[in-house]
Length: 378
Image (cartoon, rainbow, N blue to C red; front, side, top):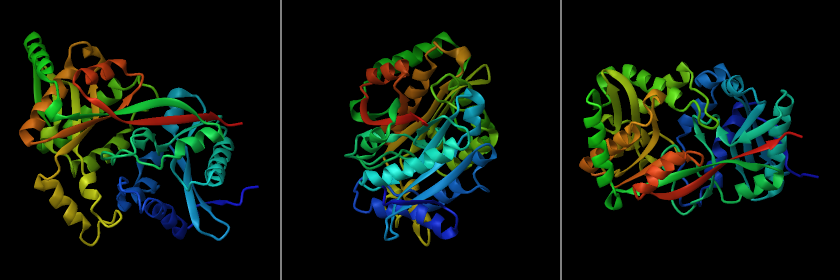
């Protein structure tokens, strides 16, 4: 019989412990990057996170018999996912556990019971709280820190999930490219050919004076381009507005590329400076009293030399025209001028053969492997 006690989060004190636990669990882990506490609070807030307009979530804490917090988990109902797929799949997320499998088993049991009581038949994760947020379990690549908005976890998590009955549902890859070794001459020639073949194309950067307009272009293209991808759930207008508001604070307009055809936006790529190098210097994710100033100074100082490309999309009506290569090439050439030394492209679904082949041709290397896991609720 399990000695671990698992209870739902019901008070401010519980919520504080839920947020605090990773900072204690990873204190001696050199590659873990502490998330900003204010971001976690906003994600979990029913008032501030538009996910709760269609979804639901229950937080659980695991404690030892002595009352010490030893793990956490969230059970998640994603209304937009259920609307699109009608597959009775619930999710788990914010999963952190000690090395003791008794703890992870107790947490997963509690989350599974909560989902089953709501009529769901399967559970998948981790998603925090959706695949449009930080998602996936790191299963290979523990010897370096993650890029911005990518997860990091202890290496025994996969073993615990498999032992509980989960199976790998999908593999995702993080590709890394060092500008020094990038084979982009062919890509550059191909991009020039695309522009010559389609003279109506115009490549431009994000216009900060018309940020909301360009953000709406990106939302429309993203939801269309990704609609057939495994597990994709379209962002609601409110969810994308929240994302755009967060991105506006850190985005460099030179690293956002849009392609128009006779004035119609048809493709885009968004890259972000890898602020994890700055966030790691903060006091356990605290912005106050001086963390925010420090973060902003480091972001604007030019010392951050790596970027991550988390979003890219091409309208389906324009597939096969080489537009993905066009936006990647534009990002590469801009990065060179900015002194960028490396870029992570993540995550890439294992089922996306076309993009994987394109990244292999660029001499990009698989840097990290992530997984999403699923089981039937018995």
